[in-house]
Image (cartoon, rainbow, N blue to C red; front, side, top):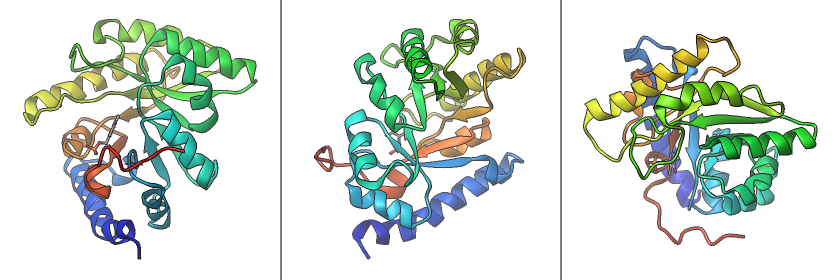
Length: 239
Ligand SMILES: *Cc1c(COP(=O)(O)O)cnc(C)c1O
């Protein structure tokens, strides 16, 4: 077994148990929480280990790395999630290589995706990223404008908004995390009250805050460190 296979044999059952317990505590079915395994900055070996461990949803935060891994393993090897900021000039690559882009953080990017997808006669599935913690350094739709803007974007042909995504601040205070995730859920409820133009997904929760995210309604947790260990900045060397 490779190092990553050995590690996953230990970590994956632990993560799944953690998800199951959090879901149970919230009175939810654990099958309602999808595990997106975040392989960013880990080598191809990590992705292969994830696939052989039965993980089907894989997340990357850089287009180059996504493209390289999809290139090596094939478009159909997994459901590929793009979870990091997408620059306008890389949008075409995201459209080509990601099944779901979690990080649509501006109207401009959403419009660009819609235009490209429509031109190609297809649909791109995205989540709208909301800056529900309100931190200046974080990208995403501002909470006070999110409902109106996202409803407008949901009308664009070529664009399917499957739900919302947020990133919590890097803190441990439960109240702050719960407020961030609860804030996203509130915005989502307002959107869903307007019909079903925006889908049911709530992408929230990472290694350090997945229990709270699940309690607040997460349908997708994005987990890297708890599965694959700490990331070395240089672990992934690109194409
Ligand atoms: C890296 C990353 C994750 C995974 O973080 P961990 O703390 O390692 O679980 C989740 N979401 C996004 C957007 C990320 O960039």
